[in-house]
Amino acid sequence: MIFADNVVNAGETAIAFSDLVATAYTHRVQLWSDGFYKTPGLSWDKDTLTGNPFYYFAYGAAVSEVVLDTLTGEWKLLRADLLHDAGQSLNPAIDIGQIEGGFIQGMGWLTTEELCWNEQGLLTTHAPSTYKIPASNDCPPVFNTSLFNGENPAETVLKSKAVGEPPLLLGFSVYFALRDAVANARADRQHGLYVAPASCEAMLKAMH
Image (cartoon, rainbow, N blue to C red):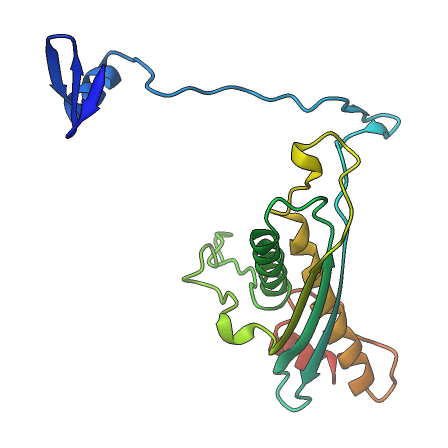
């Protein structure tokens, strides 16, 4: 079989690729391969809350510095220092990009992406067109990201670890920095910010 110039040739038969796909679709013939993977060694007893629900764990730490305007509730992330466990990284440049992207996404989730419902109970902030997501200007001017140097003890691909979702939780460092800033701005120095998202309105209300 030869596929060239958008035509599939099989022996003396030639058919346009688009026609072949359409014919396969109408005859319920699958043109791709798929499969399923079962993670080994997992077990979990929901009654006793014991077992091994995960194949391995990924760890991370973050420190954030923010400045807060006590008159308006506006804030700015000045600096972020991240350390994340990617095991034996397959591609440090890609992993660092994933970590920084997850951090900024988590920051937006906790500070600007407010959920709002109308009187009928329908979610009105259902897409980035209806709520504010972080932009390039929200990235801190000082942004340091490092990978923890250590192999994954589990039998993974070249001892690596996934970095698609865990870095999202590093964004909590921004929220906690804002909470501490609110507490320090109050006269009683006792109550911080305990609502999310930490919008400007929420912080202004918490300071008074």
